[in-house]
Image (cartoon, rainbow, N blue to C red; front, top):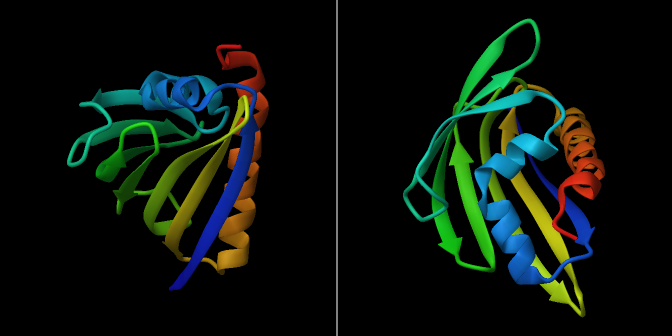
Amino acid sequence: MFSGEFIYKTKLPIKKEVAWTFFNDISNLVRITTFPKITIVSHSGTKKGSVTELDLNFFLFSKKWTLTYIDVEKGEFFTDVSDTVPFPFKSWEHTHSFEEVGEETVMFDKVKFESYVPSFIAKIGLSIMFKGRQQSLKKHLPI
């Protein structure tokens, strides 16, 4: 078993409260994720203790993913955890935080994980996923 931590920083040309509203809407995760295709099975809001169930479609197979929000500070950050994550991960703790810098917002995605592959390989996959989301944001942000 391997473990690691991955941090991805994204600059957003919007105010922090607009960024928070956008990322607090789970349907926007579906819009900005190009792979795998995500379907929302259930979502009871982004608040401490709430649970979100997603279906991830990897073309040849799909995987149920259940996230539990363990910490939320409205307008600042939320942290979700899961132990039903897709390969190569065994467990996942993801903190999504926002920092206002002038008229823009810097968003940080911090993922602590355990994986079945060396952490440098898992980090490559995470980097590809978050870069894809960053590119997709250009089309979907409320600018």
